[in-house]
Amino acid sequence: MQIIEVTGFAVRSAVITMRRKDTPLKFVLIPMLHVASPEFYAQVRTRLEACDVIVAEGIRGKSRQVSTITLAYRLAPRRRRNGLEEQNYAALLPAGVPVVNPDATAAEAVADLRRLPRWMYLLLLLSAPVMGLVFALRGPRAFLDKDLVVEDLPPTRRAEMLDDHPVKHAMTGRRDQLLLDALGKIHLERCDESIAVAVLYGAGHIPAIAAGLMDRYGYRPRKAEWLTVFIPQ
Image 1 (cartoon, helix red, strand yellow):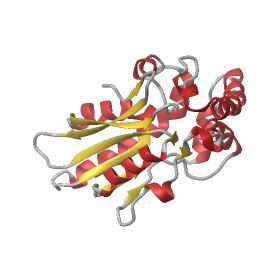
Image 2 (image 1 turned 90 degrees about the horizontal axis):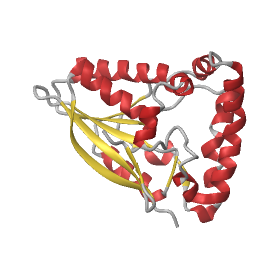
Image 3 (image 1 turned 30 degrees about the vertical axis):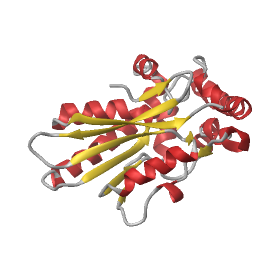
Image 4 (image 1 turned 30 degrees about the horizontal axis):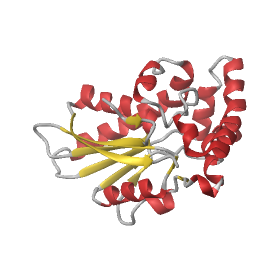
């Protein structure tokens, strides 16, 4: 299943609708990128307005380590000529649609990272700001460099290769499990209702979530729609 398409012309994200044969509830998986064009976020908001529940990513609480890692994408939109902006829930989430946030706490996220070998943990903290500066200076085309990959913008083939990497497991393992548990609860309580549940999470989480919905509850991809994340200048 292709989640993100990266070519020399554009970056696109696949919005995937998953259904079961015997129940009307549907899950709409929306692979997000923390940095994208304003047009991408406008398209996402339009689709969220058509949903009945939004399950949204967002580590709860604050920590110095988490803030350091997120510099990799918070620095990228600082130069206006890049034509990019940072994901902003205040503008993205439509009023009136209930939002569920099952994500990990900052303390839990840091605890998972600290289980990495010390050299790997320190390298992660040191490299994030450097990557952010590179993205800010080079603009959107930095995202197309095969040697520069961030967690929420992996070419699908590379994402599959990195599934067993300890850093990826530390950053997404617990959070994916919490998300699947929350989706399972919605399925058990509301599967007989004709509602659309949006799953608004980073693209790096989507393959595990799609697999979990298929294996645990029998949901299958029924429709996909490509959204353009940005077109490099």
